[in-house]
Amino acid sequence: MGERSDCADPWVLKGCGGAEFDKAGGALATLLFAALAFMPGVAEAGTGGGDLFAPQIPAGTPLQSAIASGRSAVGARLLLLSQLSSLVAHAKTLTTGDRFALTQVIASDESALSQLQISMTSAASLAALSAEEATMVLDYHVISLVGPVTRDVVNADRSLAAEKKLARQVPEIEATISASGLTRARQVTASLLLSELSGG
Image 1 (cartoon, one colour):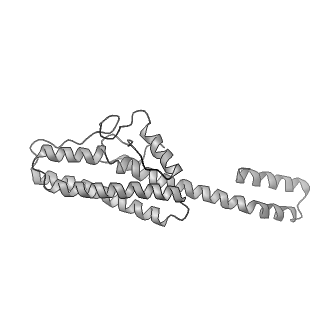
Image 2 (cartoon, rainbow, N blue to C red):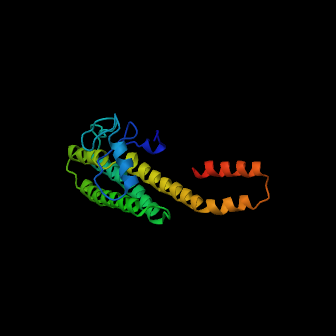
Image 3 (cartoon, helix red, strand yellow):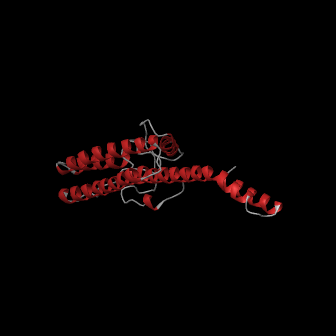
């Protein structure tokens, strides 16, 4: 899918990664999540492999400052998930399966990250907070995976819907061409262009 501006996340230092995806339902959504998750050089959830690794809290950082920073990073992900949820809810051309799959992934991550944000508040040490930040990055790839894939699925389903709409209009357009009074040669040319446009 190429490199995205979404990947420039200060908590994900080297761009886009992947994650496990076990939610059934959306064929296109499932394929895209799976394709990214198994790309060479992509991190597996919880391992820190590939290009995705846990953030490091500088030694000597005041605990309360580190907690505020960690909670802010979780908050940014929750905001993005809220925006994605709205995008999915209002997308008019999503297939039923893809809508279900995306909704399940987003809702699951929202719930887990909300709990993680609460847990960060009571972190007793930088080490404990660091472990929670590692979970945020390595187990919930909101910025590097969920966001880009959700947008791609919405756009892909929109394109498929447009193609189907054009396909339904082809017979009417062909009839218009036939009744247009064009010369035979021009009718053939127009029909060929229509065929290419509709993928026929």
